[in-house]
Image (cartoon, rainbow, N blue to C red; front, side, top):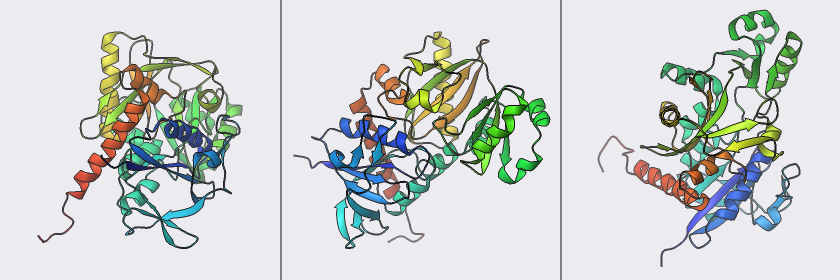
Length: 368
């Protein structure tokens, strides 16, 4: 009988998307096949401390997205230390607290989706699900992401980048002449619609910029693209494939944080999207092209706008997309023939496959 794979689900984190991560983790933890996997739960609190524990005492009010939180008082405080051969270290007595075969990061936003944790896992020599350091970093930074998409010939919306020290010199009239109105103002390094505002007048402009700067030192100002919101999931390493596209029909003014994670009636999800066959193929092509241009691996969700004239613009990519019960990434794969549990199996296999390929690479100029 084959031994079980020990999977560490890593969730929580220091970003403003902490609560979203807890919801996603809850769904993944419930879906992991206990006949195949031993599951370790590692929660990261908002101060960045790592805790190891079981689900019954760890996630408080897990079924309520407004109240869900990590129980910081429960569990063993642990850390990963490079050179410890896949072992967690118990910080109370500095002894090993359990071996890990693969990590499933479910960390949305900075300090988890931006390459920081991925770098730590690389140093610890542990396989992990999702993109590596580079793909994670460029996927998180919307400025770098959009420049790479543009240079790859992938259509994207017009945008301006503003750094915090430039705020005093920012002039609404100059921005409007370049971007148009309405416009969106958002932090460069955040997701889940946190810190985003739709600006429709000069009076709304500066408050929107100030709110975005509360979350990041760099913000984006983007043109408003009239059109349908289309999303497509991508899966794979060297030869990625795309799912059927889905459509988000917001019931609010735009697809806000509340619409995504709290208000189950905040948006209608059309899965699959009702699109002509040629448009479906174009969406899938752009999704895979974006995935490759941004050096992604494992998984990602690509978000696009479909204009009334049929033109498509890529909005952004999410390298650790939501896995909640109403999230598009797993729903799109389910519609494409891959159920939730099988999707998790594939992601874990992709992580181990990439790790084994990397382990085969030479690390010395000289032959042994």
